[in-house]
Image (cartoon, rainbow, N blue to C red):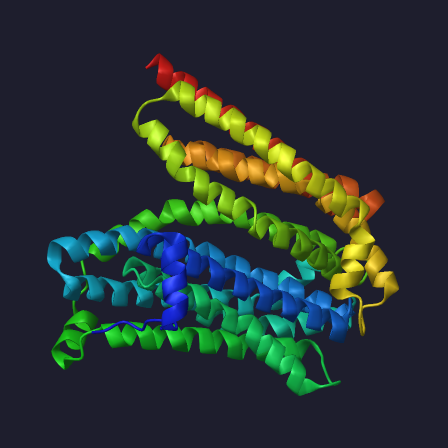
Length: 459
């Protein structure tokens, strides 16, 4: 069946083709453009939330609960979908599209069942989870967090399944829809905030999030259904007979799940420990992270994507000396380019926060709190970029087990340093802890690269 395609005007297609030089690069530029548009929509949502709610106490509860669900969805979304893509591609080549489609349908069903079980357990245990993670919340605020945790359950289901469908589309080389559809979630929040007028509260964010996630899932679901065979016999066979490749997908998902827990739980730990501080600390930490995320989105990702093919080529040629030189050169360029940016963010933090967020309910006092945290958080940028690039080398060397060790060690160190610094600096102490952990992880990852390269040379 024909796939949904994004049709651009002929002059724009011609311009992109001339500028990019190839269809592959043109497609990459289009995906990058849509990703940037999605980030602009997400930032518009954040600015509007700051205007309506500032650092209100109920925003703490929403951001904490939303963090729980995005963590669970990301962990499961990095497990089954990631292991599904290579199995799907292999089955498509060896057995044909119909068998591959059957594997896709059954994988989505398995993923949905896992999301439903996790979400149901979290909803049932909501009072205990909230009581343990929000020791600094008042009883009324804890009760609100419990209600929000249960109210956002549809978001978890839609978000998780949409991630899987996006991976399915990318496996079929339909990149544009998978890259553009996620912006429907922040767009739904923006629409909900505008419709609510002056009656904005945490439930406004919940409704916008849920309906945005439903729209995201619906768009991808329509695209997938249009690809699948329409014969009733195929659907009956797919529902009755399990595809053998499904067992491989579920088995290979375990390492991805473990890695997702290790790499993704740091944010949950930070938000949980921020909830033990004064009211608004979770929101303050969240605003600071969003500013840093804007910079990292246009530095860490592109840097690792551009350098990764070169690392893989050097590994394939067994050019260990060249790989070592490329690592040192990349580290020098990253530090030289990002350090001035980091220092500028540190000194201009109040002005940056004022320009981005200070309006409506977000007042000068909120600007001062967020700027104080941002001064510490900004210094994570060069270490985060360096660690991301070095991690690409580790993956190229097929030594990912070292990354799991570093990730779990960093998780323990992050919680320990949070506890140490937050007692004196509050939310800024959590940001300082994150910076120190990224620094140690970047150095450890670079050291791992050099160690593995040395072993390769010796072998």
